[in-house]
Amino acid sequence: MMLEENSFRELKPLIKEYLIKSPQQESCGIIYLDGADFVFLETENLSDNKRQTFCIDPQVILKYNPVCIVHSHINETAYPSDIDILNSSELCIPYLIYSLRFDEFYLYQNKSV
Image (cartoon, rainbow, N blue to C red):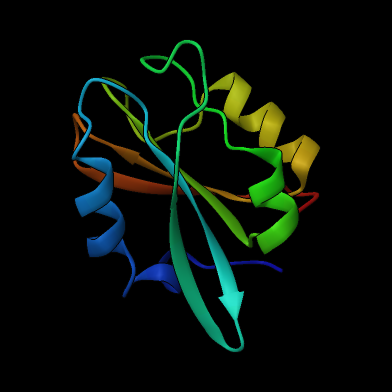
């Protein structure tokens, strides 16, 4: 499913509110489809290095079959890191990234997604 930057326009305020609650670590969540509606689900960051990476429980991915993975960057732009690009490609799931520092969203979609 190819997504557009404004696909989650209604969810972005809710997503931002959640992500800015933890400014010292990357926060994460998923967006999944419930019928025809996009739903945002907050998830715990299970990473051992929460300041630089995030990890979502694989059971959450399997249960909800997300259309997009959401996470924050603390001090960087919202542009995906090399590891974001690699993981998005491996999972075939787009990433919606929010930069706390620059107050911006970026939707990354690998061409293979």
